[in-house]
Length: 407
Ligand code: ADP
Ligand code: ASP
Ligand code: MG
Image (cartoon, rainbow, N blue to C red; front, side, top):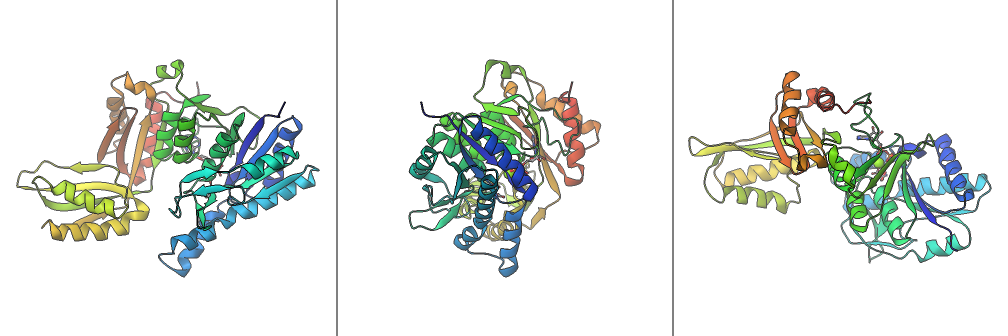
């Protein structure tokens, strides 16, 4: 009988230096010795991807995206070769590959490419000859043979996609925390590790700022039913299983609190209050590929109103430019912006059937004298925009309010 395949992904923090690379290699070798076929996906060392991006921006304000992918994909090539050497040193046979070499084919959307096909033939061949296969995460190749990347945190997506095509027995994400917690353990010291969480909730938490997994990888895992095990590369403890919703999960009203400090607020003042104006504004913004998150429009008493919305911080300059153009076209007023905001969110599947969550969240903020500037809700989440200086205090207050700490 063929051996079960295990896909393991080691994040940047788990391969940040030589000792950690050795530590990861040891774990890989142990899994192989336990009788599994092992496919490993690695991220770039530590924050070397950030370094490469910084370097590009020293050369030019707007790096060409094809060239940016050419540059930032190199980080993973470094780590996969080094990890392979470390495995050799432990006496096991291993071989490293780039995304292109293992047939990860993507579309042409540089810096956020989508996987369209994976021809894992080479991986299977190497596994059959008893090797451990190490794949550079985060990257693929388009049909023109140009290197592409899969969006920040994209090694998670590489791992989930390989687990799917290889029909792996498990997909383990090794990181620097013991699993998914009720809040970022760096902010809430007594945050609790979750044993299980549903794809839906994990997707929301990740999209709302919990950095531990890339949202797109969870979307992919949900679509194809790939269970994910998030765990620590520094211990052997069982981590968090992300899977489809099971009955018991519904009893938990709130599963976690997330924080995003990377958004900015833009306000177009004195917008004429008549039909069609909002459509015009947001159509122009969408044309520029800017993802608008929250929108607030006040009731007008004078025939004109202010429209505020939030966008990713990286898109702020572009947004201000477009907003000024629109404001001229529709005869609105000044354009203001605010970078000192943060978005705190609570997520929980139980919200579908429990009321009062929003009220409790607002109460937690009120008790700390934190003003709420914007609110948005959906079936399983509530988000509030607050001042950035109050962000961490807000997270801790909400976490406490919902009794999420260790029992
Ligand atoms: P990796 O290098 O393994 O990809 P990241 O640094 O990208 O790791 O993600 C792990 C970090 O995510 C943790 O160190 C933790 O501070 C942060 N984090 C944010 N929210 C959460 C959460 N709810 N649960 C666990 N970790 C979280
Ligand atoms: N190195 C890439 C990043 O920093 C991909 C990853 O770590 O998953 O975004
Ligand atoms: Mg990461």
